[in-house]
Length: 127
Length: 279
Image 1 (tube, rainbow over the protein chains, first blue to last red):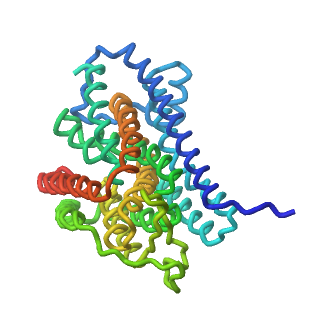
Image 2 (image 1 turned 180 degrees about the vertical axis):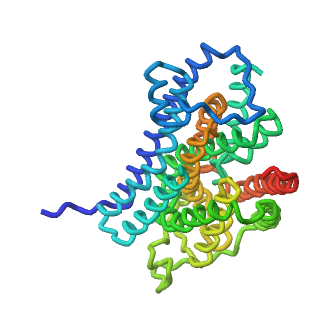
Image 3 (image 1 turned 30 degrees about the vertical axis):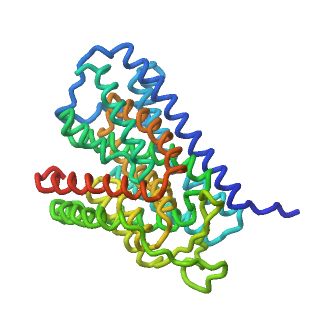
């Protein structure tokens, strides 16, 4: 028995929920990490006049996860920011699936092109 | 300035940035970058990192409301994202080759012109139920959006020109490291004749994707500082969710004036930064 095709509205509702869930998860992590960070370092001066790239543990997923395990506020913030960055990418990935459920081949192709370019620019930029 | 004070100042500024960003489809960079660089003396690279965070937070936060309410047109968004994302790749490639200074000044001038243009509403084009042929029909771009008197239909025109402008917008964002919401809104509103609320909310839906591609790279290069990004993200999110309520009820005429004002400021920032060699 063929499953019924999704309507545009159903897909929009799921995309809206996906975006909201991603942002709320990110915000919860950033807020929790921020509270820890401020409780420990709130009184210390912050000086960002001169650029020093963030230390390795704050700019790679592995480093961030290590810091989160040790309950470092700054790493928990970074994990939240990574969740935030992943949210729009997850939205595009979901669109491929959603348009497939709508049986809209043209837009499956369009969403796949966008996803490919996106993933390509993420990997090329890293080099 | 202590971390605590910095959080309060940045959080407050970011509330405003998120509010304006959600209303105009621009993201919050217009407010965040000068607040950080001119106001707090932060290095431009940290400011770009924080600005990208603000764009993604505004986009995803506000889009969740706009998509649900039927303002953002996800087909228009997805189709045009092909142009913006490939454009952004080309821009990143060109960044080492062309003068960002000249481009920044040109972009500023284009924005100045757009600011004056966008105050005037475009001529209303009738939109019949069965519009024959055309690329917009082929790509199923026509739609409707909530208006006081019930859903209002609209038709999309000039798809190739809009697509081309979106490519240009993407290239600029790759070149200059900025979200190019302003050009996206102008392309949809002025060229493709999409109603302003749909243009602003669809741009808002799109800018998160462009920013996420750059943000991943900048995160890796250590541009994203948690002490700065934390208040920016939280402030912008609250501001943008407030902004979405405002847009739904606002008159289009008022939104146009706010949009024109914000891109006027953006134009001045752009020219100021480019002329001073800070791009």
